[in-house]
Length: 356
Image (tube, rainbow, N blue to C red):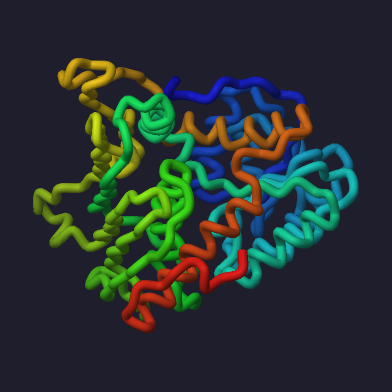
């Protein structure tokens, strides 16, 4: 099942932000899924109005604060810089039943933990848009692991060699790849294998990124309580690029188990042309050791984003916790924080050093 089923479309959504991820990805996925988006706001009203016209959104607010006060909005969906996001989350009015926050939830673990506790005390559902676990290859891999096709997982790798579009607002943060890109991969490794024991992170600046930073090219090794070892690489440099240079851009992953192997690619780096993520696997238990490759046509960008919003609507409808619950996301933020401590102190950092 590469795509999550749509079980609920009944809650009215107001979106905050009109940049690429909202305008080109999230709203495209919502329109395809039939979700009712009733209002939009951004820092620039004209930009929000332009996106509203593209996607048939009836109400354009002057600013995010006005949208959050709009009584017709039941879910506030925020795609905003992480230093500005916490204040918007805290504005949620009684008529707002749930908030979907962008990842990273905040720039540090302390703020993320505070937001989770405040949401718990207020009885407000807060979910975090960790969308990689809805990527089709990751969903199918998780199903194979749960079914036992690969036996006991032993080793996992994620190898990203791609050039992100770093937004201008990242210049002043002092934190770059770990909190803005590794957060995808660290979260999906938790989704697949459970809680890690420790993380060792090494990094160096990226020659292409013009503003000051430490964590450009990043490599992290994780050891999990289950015994799995994982290596995660974000090579945001990839060598020379452009002017006719034939760069090799990709994200590959592989999982080796006692009874089988699975490997694949993530279909994000070639956006906007776009291609589906891929998976192939061989298993003693289910394929007789032969390689099998399931096929699908849907993509991480945009279709997987429907699953993110659907899981929050279903939580409101059913009373069950959302899959991407803020309390779980605090554990991902702790892993990011441990990566920065490892980078600073040049050692493996145990997650037991954090109270989460």
